[in-house]
Amino acid sequence: MRVLIALAVLTGSAAAQPAGEWRVKPEWVKAHEEFLASDLLQGRASASRDEGITATYVGSQFESYGLAPAPGLAGFVQPVEIERPQLDGHAALSFGGAALHEGSDFYILSTLGETFTAPLQKIAAADWKSAKVDPGAAVWVEGASELGKDMPRMLTTLSIQGPKLLLFADSPDVRENFQQAGGQTRIPLRIKGAAGPALSRFSATRIALTGNAASQLAVLKNGEPITLALAARPMPPQFTYNALGYLPGTDSSAGTVLISAHLDHIGVGKPFQGDSIYNGADDDASGTTAVLELAHALAAGPRLKRSVLFVCFGSEEIGGLGADYFREHPPVPSKNLVANVEFEMIGLPDPKLPPNTMMMTGWDRSDLGPALNQHGARLAADAYPEQNFFQRSDNYALALRGVVAHSVAGMPVPPFYHRPDDDLQHLDFAYMTAVIQSMVEPLRWLANSDFVPRWYPGKEPK
Image (cartoon, rainbow, N blue to C red; front, side, top):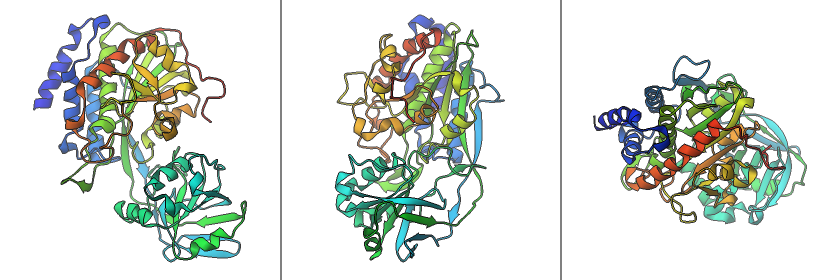
């Protein structure tokens, strides 16, 4: 009831503010967070009923602000049918006439569930930060067991470069992480009817070799073919949910600005300090709140020249399926998207940034950030370029299609990242309000201008 009263005050007060004097109120920000990050939503797990409830809440807010359904849609919530294959447990890894078998020789941490052959590429684990991986290769990481707690970062960094397969010797740290994930091979959900995920940012199959299996690989030469044979059976379908709201512009030829976030988190999981609900107040209820309040602000003002599409994607946490579906089935043609600003974890300021400032990932790739700053946005360059955050949010799906698409964030990896204590008590509401406020007039300017952001030469992602 408290949240509903707060939202009634929120929507009822919108008309009282002239557009040029629009002020985002901290109580509005807090009201959204109290619902989105409540225990009742059980952590908004990807492709769950709670994610669907979240999308319904976001869609209802869009409707209350006066937005229209996105072109081609009848409502504000878009269900997307997805499916997850299940392995039969009898995978085989073959090379040079030899064969290794799942269970006795290796276990699979994650895979897309496909059979393939790829050329071997060897790299030293000590060089993982600077190693150049061949796209489509089967990468054997020698000495990976010595990395300890750096193993997850190494796997992510190498996966982004596009190998088909990552192979490494089993270690206590790898085994512990596998057991924490339930001791089951992670196979991402996929959009129904697709051969695989429309886009998987971390698509490499990851295999830990046990016993003396690693020694058999160690003698192979670069370029030798390795085949992974998998068999999978389909499971019952599920749904993920996107929430979309559309603010039509006055000039249908001027293009559309996309403002987005993801609305899911990781649900209920391993307990931490007696709590097992991963509320995701920062990741990414904070970004969802930003999209809602920017929709609130822009819809309350004079009609804009360009259209603005507000989208909160589902299933980001399990591979970006909501954004992938949007990319493949955009309600407006991708060529008409002028720019995309994705809000990802804006709940806390980062000590490396000036006060009340967000970082923009891929800052040096386009002229969008500097242009927004000239009109009052509080944005700065990515303070952690080595973490590849540009590739790790839903903006990347569109960036690969040529859309100038960036994510903005506060502290990108706070101490409570992917833990149950990512909750309301750890948010800085004054900071959130200030940075959302700083984006209102710059985005209004972008939607009213003729400015078309461009990738800098050689910086467009491929």
